[in-house]
Amino acid sequence: MISAIEALRRLREGNERFVADVRSHATDASRAHRGELADGQAPYAIILGCSDSRVPAEIVFDQGLGDLFVIRVAGNIVAPSQIGSVEFAAGKFGTRLVVVLGHSRCGAVEATLDALQRPSVPQPRHLYSIVDRVRPSVEALLATDLRHDPEALIRDAVRANVRVSASQLRHGSDLLEALIAREGLLVVGAEYSLESGVVEFFDGVPA
Ligand SMILES: [Zn+2]
Image (cartoon, rainbow, N blue to C red; front, side):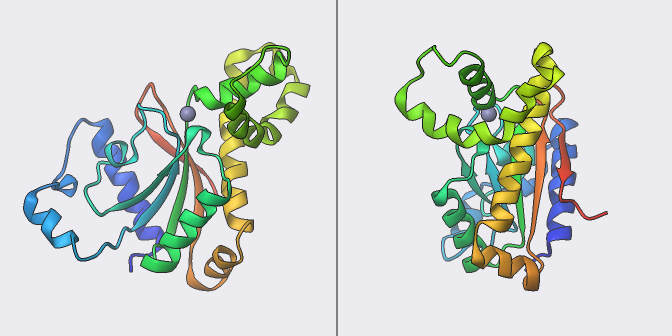
């Protein structure tokens, strides 16, 4: 199995290709490759990303069929089913890298800030299942001067939300904790820039 560090290198290189508008045969989706994969998969990274239509993991990392095990949910939140999905992939396939991938101007984070700043405006009932998961990571920011600077507020809130999700994956599962302690599983946080296409890994990356 590919180590976490090697997996991180592949993702960084893939994102560099994406940013440079070069695609590689790593994105192979041919019939022959489909056939090879039909009997089994060995994804080398697990990505917990946002559902935003502009941030599909396979495309922004220039990867192909069978490379990435992707979980997408608005706001890249961590609820029990997300932890279960990560446990499944890490346990079954031996995948050693988990990336929480947030992105600039995330609508779920904006909706949460909005709900906190204007609590009287009703939101669709089930949206609260997202907002309530984002809320603890961004609430404290509203008590700082950032509340007067909407651009800076959303920027910091996106990163705070990624950090909290990554921490919840590191500490919210006995299986994942054991894999981190003994098998070299690495959980990192990253942010995709809608403007530049660059993914910056900013949390939990070994020096
Ligand atoms: Zn988003």
